[in-house]
Each structure stands twice: as C-alpha cells, then as structure tokens.
Image 1: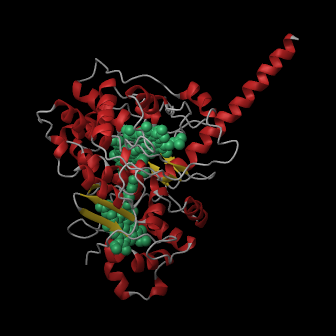
Image 2: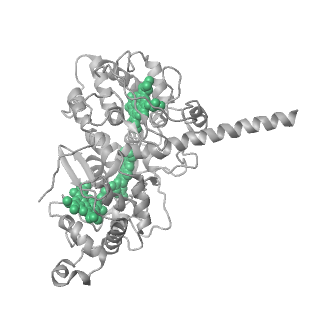
Image 3: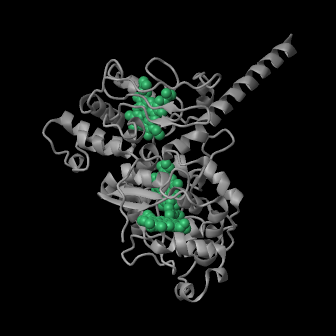
Amino acid sequence: MKQKRQKSLGLPGYFALSAAIGLGTGTFAHAQDTDPNTAVAERGHYLAIAADCAACHTAPGSSKAFAGGYGIASPLGSIYSTNITPSKEYGIGNYTEKEFAHALREGIRRDGAHLYPAMPYTSYTKLTDDDIHALYVYFMTSVKPVESSPQKTELPFPYNIRASMAIWNALFLDDTRFKPDPSKSVEVNRGHYLSYALAHCDTCHTPRNAMMAEKGSSPLAGASLSSWYAPNVTSDPVSGIGGWSNDDLFRYLKTGDVPGKAQAGGPMAEAIEHSFQYLSDADIRAMVAYIKQVPAISDSKDKAPRESYGKISDRESVYRALPASRISRGEYLFSGECAACHRPTGQGSPDGYYPQLFHNTALGAPIADNLITTILMGVRREVNGHTTYMPGFGPGSYVDSLSDQDIADISNYVEQRFGNPNVKVTPDDVKLIRSGGPKPLIAQLGAFTVPAMIGAALILAVAILFFIRLSRKAKA
Ligand code: HEC
Ligand code: HEC
Ligand code: HEC
C-alpha cells in the first residue's frame, strides 16, 4: 500500500520552469550544437542548475521562471528574491556582464546597494570568469523576460540599512576566485569547485562562528539549520562519512536514498531534487572524489558511525499477544503511527520504499534533531519522476495529531530499539524544534543567518564608531 500523494505545495514552479527551459530532457548534455553562443548558453543553463538559482528565484507555485518573489522568512520579515529574467524594466536586462559578476561575486546590485546574504554570493564569489560569462549569456539569451515585479523586501530599521553588509563583507567575504590545488587530481579540483562555488555544500554543512561566518577551521564538520541538522560529512570514519563507499555517496547525491545508511529529507532533499539529480554522472563522481578526501574532523563524543547503530526488532508477535497496557507508551504510539510503513520490526518494506530504521543515520546520530524534524515535517522528494513521501505529524501537516510528549515518547522508543540508545528526547526538545516551524526549507536556512549577519555587522559598526570617538578624545 504505497501512499504516493500528489504534492500540495513544494516547488511545482520548478517543473513548470523545467518545461519552459527544456530541462529534464537532458538537452544541456548535448552541447555539440553548431552555434557557439548556443553552446555557451547551454553550459550556462547547466551551471544555473548546479548553483540552484531557480530554487530561490522562482516563487513557489509560479510558472514564471526566475521572476523572483520567493520569500526567505526571517524573524524580521521576509527577504524576497528578485526578478532575474532579462526584462529591462523589472529584471536584470540592463545589467552588463561586469555588473552581473559584481552582484554574484561581491553581493552588490547594479544600483550599488548591498544584497543581503540570503543571496549566496559568499559561495558564488569562487566562480570563474568563464562560468560567470556562460551564466550571463544564458540569462540574457535563453531565459524568457517576465514583465512584472515581485514583492519588495522591507525589513524594519535598522536592518534596512543595506550598507551594514559592507562591514560584514569586509571581515568575512573571501572575495577570491577558485584556485585549483596542483597537488590534487583534476577530478578532485573539479569536485571542489562544483561543491563550493556552485552546489555550496559548505553553506549548510560547515559550522558558523558568532558572527555567522563559516568557520574556516572546520569545513563540513556539521551544523544546525534550526530544525534540521546538516551532519559531519568529512572523511572521519566515526564522526563523518569515511565509512561510506564512493558508490554510496554517489547514490545519495543522485537519489537521496542509500538503503541501510541514510535518506535525505528537508533542505538536502531539496538540493537533490532541484539540482544534484540533474548533474552529469562525471560531475557527481568528481564531487564524491572531492568530498571523500576532505580532512577528517572527529568529535570525541562519537563512539561509532551513525549508520552502525541498532538492529532488527523481534517485537512483531508481541503486539498480538500483549494488551496495550503492557507495552510502553512510546512503543504503543510507534505501533499505531509508524509501524504500518516501517514495520514493527523496523525493517521497512521489502522494496525499500519505506526505509529500515536500524542502520539509519537519522537514528544513529548523536542528536535527535533530524528524527524529530522528520516526524514533524515528514519527507518529500521527487527524483527521476518518482515521489518519495512520508507524512509529517506536525502543525499544518496531513496528520497533526501528536503532542510534544507523544513525539518525545516515540523518539525515545525508536532511539532505544533501532538507534543510538544514548540519545534522550524531552518534550521541550520537540517544542523547540516545532518553533522552527514547517516553513519552506531554504527559508529556514535564511531565517537565522541573515538577521544575525546584519545584527553582527551593526554591532560592529557601533563598536567601530565608539573606538573612533575614544581615540579622538584621547588625542584631544
Ligand atoms: C538561496 C537563495 C538564492 C540562490 C540560490 C540564488 N539567489 Fe540570487 N538572490 C537571492 C535573493 C534573496 C536576492 C535579493 C537579495 C536582496 O534583496 O538583498 C537575490 C538577488 C540576486 C541578484 C540581484 C538582482 C537585482 O535585484 O538587481 C542577482 C543578479 C541574482 N540574485 C542572481 C542569481 C543567480 C544568477 C543565481 C544562481 C547562480 C542566484 N541568484 C542564486 C537569493 C538567491
Ligand atoms: C541547503 C542545505 C544543504 C546543502 C546545500 C547540502 N546539504 Fe547535505 N544535508 C543537509 C541536511 C539538512 C542533511 C540531513 C538530511 C536528513 O538526514 O534527512 C544533509 C545530509 C547529507 C548527507 C548524509 C549524511 C548522513 O549522515 O545522513 C550527505 C552525505 C550530504 N548531506 C552531503 C552533501 C554534499 C556533498 C553537498 C554538496 C554537494 C550537500 N550535502 C549540500 C543540508 C544540506
Ligand atoms: C505512510 C508511511 C510512513 C509513515 C506512517 C511513517 N513513515 Fe517514516 N518514512 C517513510 C518514507 C517513505 C520515508 C522516506 C524514505 C526515503 O527517503 O527514501 C521515511 C523516512 C523516515 C526516516 C528517515 C528520515 C531522514 O530524513 O533521514 C525516519 C527516521 C522515519 N521515517 C521515522 C518515522 C517515524 C518515527 C514514524 C512514526 C511517527 C514514521 N516514520 C512514520 C514512510 C512513513
């Protein structure tokens, strides 16, 4: 009884977009066209997919590709993406290639104003001139102009002072192009470029410092994205994914499902759905080659790999024999809410559509964030025309029926039986993650980083002014 509901929200706009620009037919893979400009535009199209421009610049449910209006929610109000179609009036039709490069790599608009870092210029700053050119040609010649303006971003004072970003940029924007490392293979360098300049794995998987800049000392060591947690994906065999084979990682990036290891939900599912699944096998192999040699970062608290925890349960027959009063509340709820799909044994379905819960990173992880968030929001991923769907049990979802206590009880049961027995979940943990809310997922990432970056910049600005005054006084 596979339950494949049609999606009610998400990004149907992307599929309309796919149709509009011929994506999904693999056209970009055939760049042997005679017209050299077409070939450049096709390369630009591929780069735009690898960099996931459409995910943010197309409003959910809209058929107007790249017309903007996607609201990245922040506690201070939404930051809306802009129209980047070649419309001269509403889009970027008047941008020269130099101005386009400036926006992508330095975060500065044509009119000189600073962009908020909801636009990932901190990653795109690594893009080569050639790739900027290809993207520019693609946007100017192949994207259809849309003659309308999306909703404007209006953050309250003082966050509307875009100039504050100049201070943050001066401190933390490493405005340099990608430099290949001659000691590494061509493939590893290609993978590095794809993973950092385009796919920006680091924006989610690298922890940030108090000023919300990525910690250069611990690349890909794992970071919280409010409700979801992007795990350590360094080559450490215990804390990271050193124990995964190259084929495992390849399959994960292409499909989001590696049986007996991990499934991709939340923002990772979005990245796979909108971007990675369309990349060529050679490019994904290059990313795998790069990621697998990222220096190991280990956490001494981790005792065994995430995917190694848990085993099959023999409780199936118990349910028939025992009255509900004889099993724990967590197990009782599990048998009612989860076992129909994941089986009382935790084995999932034979075809793997419903995954097994033991040897599953969401349950073997040292923190329960991804387990709790999965229960609240479910999983949705469309890959290769197939939908993978688990209903969420949180607010606004299909079955909003479980309390914080219920979810804590289920979590503790599944952690004990199938996962990391050291992980304990309290109703307050669930409440905290619930308050992150089931917002669009890219929005969750922006929600905390952007205001924090601006806030940090403003605090710095005040501090600098204060010191200037102090030193003036000292001189006087
Ligand atoms: C994670 C979301 C996100 C992604 C991915 C993204 N953008 Fe943006 N972009 C934004 C937001 C939000 C703004 C508006 C920011 C603001 O108002 O300060 C923006 C602004 C811009 C602007 C300035 C346009 C203007 O208003 O004058 C350009 C150009 C641009 N993006 C191009 C791109 C391109 C090309 C890509 C892919 C290579 C891309 N963006 C990917 C979120 C994104
Ligand atoms: C928008 C944020 C985001 C981006 C970009 C992103 N990831 Fe992830 N990634 C996550 C989250 C969140 C998870 C946890 C998903 C889950 O368990 O359902 C995850 C999970 C993973 C996992 C599985 C780890 C495990 O233990 O289950 C791997 C491997 C991974 N990501 C690699 C990458 C690579 C490589 C890139 C870039 C090519 C990348 N990710 C880009 C957010 C992101
Ligand atoms: C209607 C069927 C169904 C029900 C009910 C269900 N699940 Fe799932 N579950 C799925 C599917 C489908 C996936 C995703 C498989 C994939 O990504 O390939 C999944 C994935 C998961 C994952 C891995 C998520 C990740 O991102 O790493 C966990 C953990 C999980 N379920 C736990 C639960 C728990 C606990 C319950 C009960 C509260 C539950 N599921 C109820 C179908 C279901």
